Length: 184
Image (tube, rainbow, N blue to C red):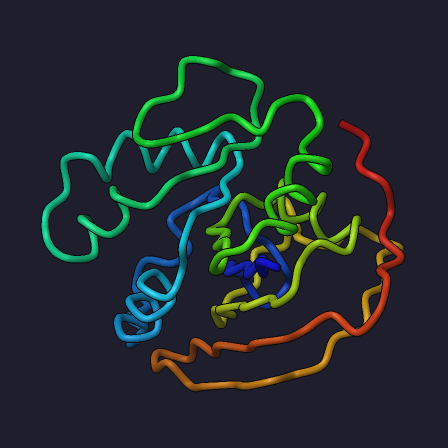
């Protein structure tokens, strides 16, 4: 059975959305972590917005990280049929498709960013590990990973100081989540 591992950049107040260049000025030493994470995965599971951004950048990037990023199969939360960059749409039933992927033999499905997809996966108990890079910034506005009323019990498995005040926190969900349903 495959595992779904999520990795998110968050502010202290839980904002994941790139509404400003809030990560600029921070230089965490996350290279080894990100490299090990990518090379330890068998496929990427991406939301449509993240896929569009990645597909615009990575195919022309160079180096070992880019080669690995480009070679991995990508599963995208969309019904679009015009995907390129080694990508397959998950279709209208994203939850069913991810359940199917998890039942397959194989390695880790890695989710980068993709906040709305992550919220959906968490709401359906499909996340096996949540890796959060917390940046020492409070924005006071922007899309947050968790909505008011969400509850989710987590167990801290590891933590690291990545420098620049950025902390890596690695959690596993303990039980079925109680998360507010998405409105969109």
